[in-house]
Image 1 (cartoon, helix red, strand yellow):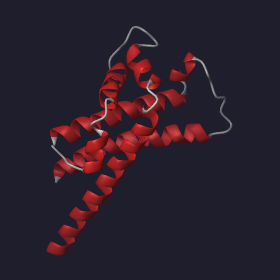
Image 2 (cartoon, helix red, strand yellow):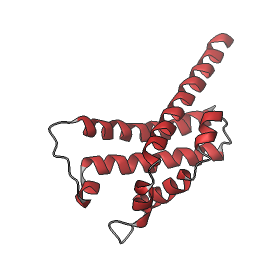
Image 3 (cartoon, rainbow, N blue to C red):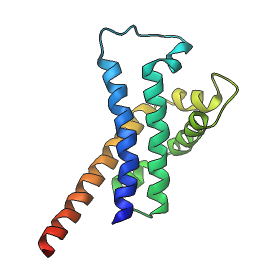
Image 4 (cartoon, rainbow, N blue to C red):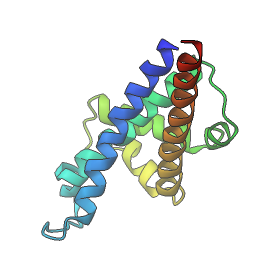
Length: 141
């Protein structure tokens, strides 16, 4: 069970970045940039680190051999490899500002909906699993 708490922590970190990113999207007072400086703005910072952190959750999911039909279906997507490369671009220095690791993920039309769905489904899984474990512990007492 400790491993579930560990992978859940990684999801919580990723989801915190998503929350900050979503807040930026709804902040009407901010000037919305349409050029490459977007990557250095708060929106780009939070989005990039959300995506990178979400890939760590995928790595943990595979290492722990967890199973959930909806999540496993989402993880069968070619977007997983695009997200891995995006994470590598975020977490490992790239000399080109608009490195292909970023562009390839952003250019794929399915990634935005896919990453949001994956994030949501991980959240659902952890809520269900941790609630179930909590029920099991309270029934044993």
